[in-house]
Image 1 (spheres, rainbow, N blue to C red):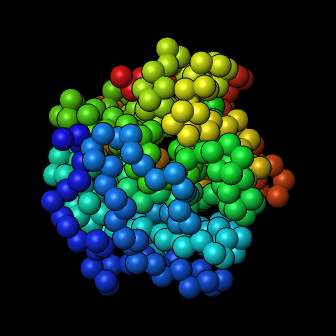
Image 2 (image 1 turned 90 degrees about the vertical axis):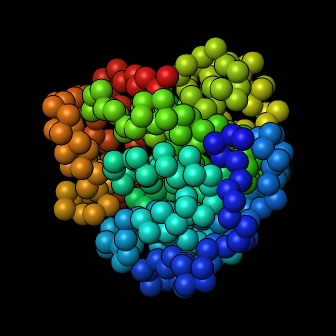
Image 3 (image 1 turned 120 degrees about the vertical axis):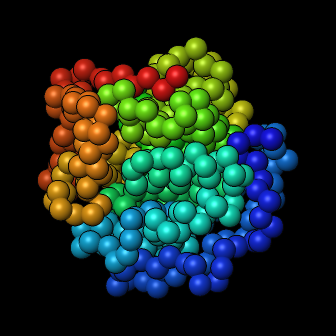
Length: 329
């Protein structure tokens, strides 16, 4: 059985009192988890061809901060026909306990930071249920139907991923049909690396990205495409890779797709108040580094440029056009 195979739990949904409600004034966002989709048989190839109308976020707890309420409200207000859910840490814990095999939950439990668990949840929930995921600090710029439905009808997309930087595809926003092989492979990669290392073993300050971040999604895409290219920009410029992507319904977009055109990203960890719960993971990361005697190694120019009006330019890790490589092998 693959690491993301079906668990022994046969319930179609978590307990009825276990639902997430966003603390936003514009809509009642209470949502029971949707029913389980038809399993893919374990081959990772059979999956729905439709991106369902679910919007997923995750946050440590509720209520949200004022900043997060403002960004989440854009998703609700612009997409009234889509069901919306914010999964708290408790929701995420139960999701992995009830929906995945024991080895997946064990690997998840070994993640030392909430941001790493959130990284893993976004892959898992979109793999399991499908829909659109957006970080809590992302803004929905255009209604989802204007880009997801067009992508499905005109390009037959069953998954939409956009570049983050020269090296990686972004994990702050993406969309997919349930059980899409890219997200299965990404989740498998997280589990495999934790099992291989016997837990999370930081080698430098980029361990979050290496274990659960954009480089993992990028490596999963490379695996599914059987690509010889290790970085996102090379995949995007390869006619062979893009042709292979079409065979699995994977639409790979330029960085502007989720960098201002359809979704904006505030980069809370560097642009919001350090005391905001939604922006605190860098402090937590430093605690892990300190416990291993590792100095922080942030690249110069790591802070994103924020345009007037609050929408960020696309963030490229490493200033002056110098991209930072993160090894996830």
